Image (cartoon, rainbow, N blue to C red; front, side, top):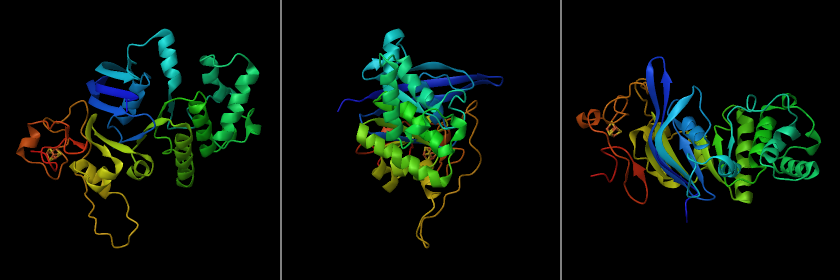
Length: 323
Ligand code: SF4
């Protein structure tokens, strides 16, 4: 199956008063049509910056693209402009983390959802646009009678439904979900996750689903990519990754997931120290300052991300299968 999206050696940095911060380093991955790729890691690992680069949104603080390729349906998204860029943008949409900040408070729900249709000049008449907006509202579980209401009249979960409606109204092939449930109450999170799953099943879209929460990633993803300090450290099918986590960082993240069994034997791995500054990343393996398995070689030699069997990729000198 041909890939929908191919990201090759993506590099992105921020210029700060303290110097250049390398936020994303040599990140490569692909997304197949209709699959959900989960991206997980602590805050500051570069997962949201990666997603914003993919959409060609300039993350805050403004940074600069240093290299790499983003191929969408075989075309270089970083070089597209004018009509071609507009067409590609219609097919790639994003759902933001904060349903409060991402909706314009001066626009009604109908206007918010109609905006992408109007920008893309999808319909000739206002009636056709309105009909598509009302249909999309029903699909995401919003009562069409709320068409003329304003975002502040809604709860967090309903606002996120408005954000989802705006993202899917054009019928995109790929949606980037940037921590779409982390700002919501726990009781609402599963409703929104289930809605996203149902929409993905019925519309056949692919998602890049970003979260710092491995339980959420486990619930929704088909494949999982783990990031640390701007680098990909492990990537595998969900079942494989959760059954055989190979990178010590992934093992530590997994060990922190609460287990339902009272007498679970799983031992929690506590990582020592804080996340190092991306302005001054460690030499050798970027994880060696916090790794419970580190040896001398780790501080001098960078491990490559390599296939350790059946497409399971891992960047550690001592991961299972590595020679
Ligand atoms: Fe830990 Fe060394 Fe593997 Fe890095 S290469 S994850 S420091 S064991």
